[in-house]
Image 1 (cartoon, rainbow, N blue to C red):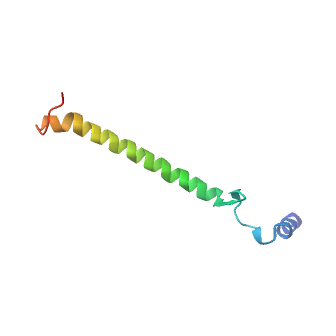
Image 2: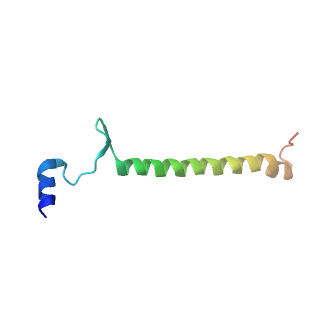
Image 3: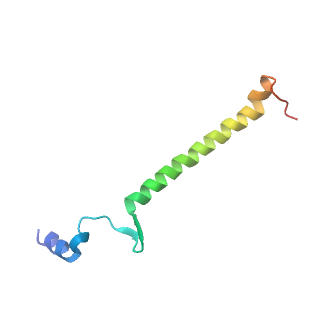
Length: 70
């Protein structure tokens, strides 16, 4: 327990708080992980929407006679 007390005294108010990625950027490591998670989900969502749109334009529309692909 002595080490924890020394660490608490050395860090002061910052004890128990997450460290920032950069000292001048107020973003913690867990916030950066959340950002990466959400942007990855968004990217996959965009890829899926692109594939669905492509399938619709290329196959579904012409099958129902809505338009012709030359």
